[in-house]
Picture (cartoon, rainbow, N blue to C red):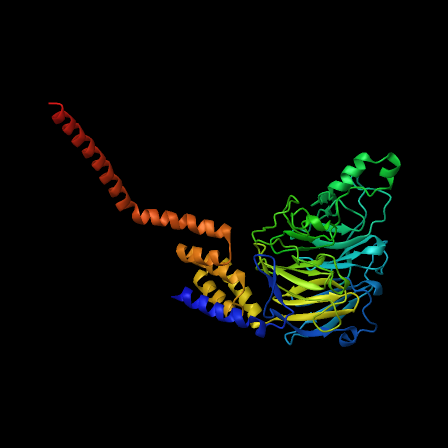
Amino acid sequence: MMKRKILLIAGLFTVCAGLFAKGDTYIYDYWGKMEKSPDAYRVSHVVYADDLKLDKGLKNPSSLFAKGNMIYVADTDNNRIIQLEYTKQKTLELRRVIDRINTEGTDEIDTLNLPEDVFIGKDESIYIADTKNGRVLRLDQDLKILQVLKEPNDPTYEEGKDFLPTKVVADSKGRVYVSARNINKGFLKYEYDGTFQGFFGANEVVYNWTDMIWKKLATQAQKEKMVLFVPVEYSNCYIDKEGFIYAVTKTFEEWDLKSDSAKPIRRLNALGKDILVKNAENLPIGDVQWGNAAGIKNPSKFTDITVLDDEVYITVDESRGRIFAYDNQGFLLFAFGGRGNVDGFFRMPTSIEHIEKDLFVLDGQNASITVFTPTEYGNLIYKATEQFACGEYDESAETWAKVLEYNGNYDLAYIGLGKACLRQNKYKEAMDYFKTKRDRRDYSKAFKYYRKEWIEANIGWMVGLIIVLVVLVFIRKIVKKIKWELDSL
């Protein structure tokens, strides 16, 4: 009865979904077709330097980092780090500007030079990728130097290149992972004491067959002019609460995206291997289809990624200024945003962060921070995924049903309802939900359990029928034998 009611509600809202959606938010269906969706987020406000009462405006800001209720901004071309507080009133207020550090007892320079990233460790240490100074600083909260990481003195590190660290994260043990410009062997890994331990998460070599064949046939002079097949660089990273590093890359060939060779988003384990789960029909590559609207013909190219506590990961795309959110199975929850000068759109998004469910997007070209807060629809999606992850299957089913009231086309709601039914041993209902949205993988799982349940429920009369058939066959043989003996007399 509940299932029929849900499908009826979903059908009604499918007809009028376009009336409720503004068009900025969308999802993709099974066939990879874009479908409008109600807004999962709304713009709370956009923050500029004047709003923060800074002595000078932001200049080419490149990175955000959030810890607790604090937001740190790498204001790169102004050679400083800005610390902001996100208040209970949902406003950003200036707390301090870090443009000079305490170098007492060291030979280090006390100013920053084009810093591109900032990270706050578990022990509240401040890590700064001081790019042009060729170092990664670890400071205490009083800005005193605790550690300085520089160019490794190691045979595996290629000499002759400037050491230009651009991104930095550290795990709970104090191990530091650094991404540096022109380094394509992965992240540089340093132990808690600053000892260089080698490279981590080296990217696979990306090449195409035509170039490889041509290189085989080319002369030596032509080969020297050709681009070398080298691993690509990571463009950004984020370390989640479990210590896994999510990394994004912008270097790939377009045709490698849909074959899953490009892997623009990766989740690296302790061995540096990609373990990102991809159970959805469409891969987590941002836009599934891309044309050349407004002169933009590139696929999505992620400049940053952030990970919520429920393992939902959210990326920002520099190609079209869009934001994509995925659950831990690789299903697209929602996408929104675009290129432009109006609130909620961006000229050049460079970084994304979160505090609880609120999102912060840094626009490097517009020198602004856009603050997004989730709508009721967005909160319902988060709530349903969290309830299911916590084993609250009845509650998650009720929440997914509410999601369908907002958006009758939402595939993940049907799949979520199906998974809830599967966990409740309602296998036939689960099969119906999975069939509705062509979820073959989960349908097969539900069918396997349904078949097992059906067999267990009917095994009695099935065995009885078999016995009866065997007895009948035996009796028939005896009758035939008796008949043959009588006929032969």
